[in-house]
Image (cartoon, rainbow, N blue to C red; front, side):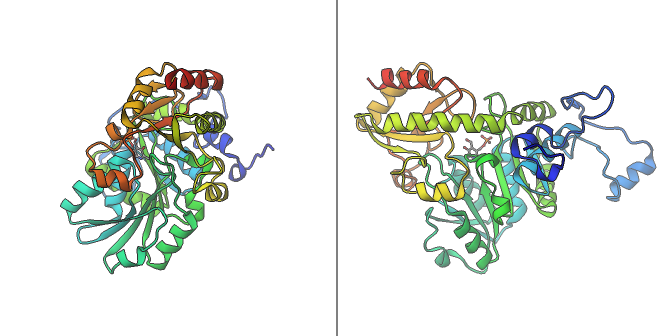
Length: 393
Ligand SMILES: Cc1ncc(COP(=O)(O)O)c(C=O)c1O
């Protein structure tokens, strides 16, 4: 149903129109790229006002830029947050958000099954800054033992990479509230089309906007969304650490966002077809896709997600040699890292997202040497199935 009230717009309308004012004479339909590193002041009096924090004028693109501001308004509306901050990459958004929340001497509890880069940041870098991270399993059992008076934040990712396990969002929020923790969630795999964690009570949502939000494998981008207060602190970190997005990337991100809803829905439908095909294939021992009734989190997925997404993984009976053979033979699927774009991709997590991890760390993440991760794109489902058939033959 069509609504003229922006507050009641659906996701597809928000993705296209939010943040942009297009009515009037000769107004461009797309937001122009303000490709300027710096902006003029009208006078030294205006400069002084800015220095005193009394002016919101644009002064320098690392601090803010009109093109970035439109992308931020769109993302804030899509996730249902007061404000958003875009960043040069998902990792820039994640590191800036974490450092906006925790300081030296404080601790984080985080689920263990995280994007490998986030896991390595927590393992290799945060401890150097005096920040300890304790990991717990996706079921969140035993959290009480890990929380102490220094614990400041809970960080989760759901669905997880690459085995598509789910964290119960209600349970996570209860845990955070019980211990007064700031709650952060990486919503990259679900996208705001399938899951809106801020509405459930999360404080900060982070994204690798490189993935579904942009959707075309043509840029690296990140974002954080939340309250105005939290986003002010995240923006400060972006300004200090330098992870600002380029205005050209913001243009591409907005172009991608306009088709987010239809891409996510269609990719999800095709992923279900692919998952069913793989689950019946004799060379496949296990398919990890929350849309399949056999998946351990299928019921939870039905409860907390508006669809099952288009990421899946599968284990081949022949282990690593069979997985390598399969990946070397695909012709429509491409052998490449990343996910969420229009091209379907396959990767071996042990050589990509989960490289440089010990055998124990891999086992804890549920990654087998023969696990293949699949990002289902927008090609014709029949062509994808034919490609899988020939690559598995
Ligand atoms: C779930 C998730 N979060 C964060 C990232 C990091 O994002 P970026 O590569 O845009 O820095 C990735 C990248 O693969 C990811 O899959």
